[in-house]
Image 1: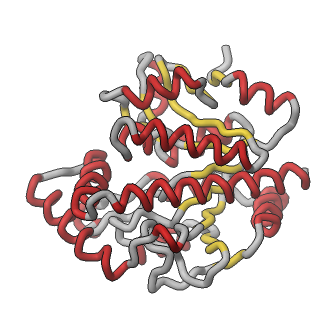
Image 2: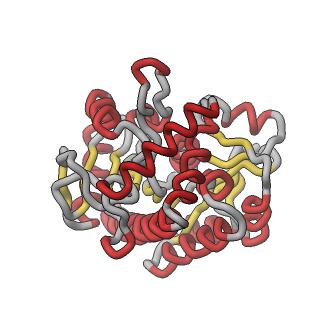
Length: 303
């Protein structure tokens, strides 16, 4: 029995050898409120289609690892209040017990790789949490990037994290971090940061060739494409910094730990920015989906 359940749209795309773009589902269940989460998910899928690729939103429904969701399944997931947040450690357990869960970056990469999908668009990756020298809180996303051969398009790591330490760990793990069209790393809601990008590429074709070259060299893992949020929708770092500090202090005061930290911080920052963080988040996810579709098309022409 196959571990994967492909949606009819994904099945048709694979049969026709059309480019596919994987999309995560944690942003739907844990990143945005209803009904904005459903509208965002539908819009992002349409962005991929508009750029001549096929979206494959990945989630676990009733123990099945779904590669691509039907319209009804997407609506169901967006309304699910108790979906598990799945990473490498708990993906198999959720499937084995017939559970329902949304996939993080790491789990989405696993599903994408098993389905033969080379490109994945998300909002921001997880990374090294602030204070990790005491908590050892480091996202499994970083190790997944080092071992699973998927190109991940994101607006950098989430800005609530320790970005310099996150970049350092990625370097140690041998993950290529490539800024798209600029020399500095984006910082999620902010298009620019003080961190210089280790690598820069300016076209989807260059990124596609780098993806395939890693395979030809036998190098494990994927590559992270840091795509800046559109300038018209960004919140610059100077303005964003006090909001992040307030949210972090609130989380500490309330004893928020583990997987609950990121959803709490995102909601708190949404409140503090009076919704502007959500507007920027939606804009950057759409932008990442468009770039991912272009990269997937380029890879498709080269193989």
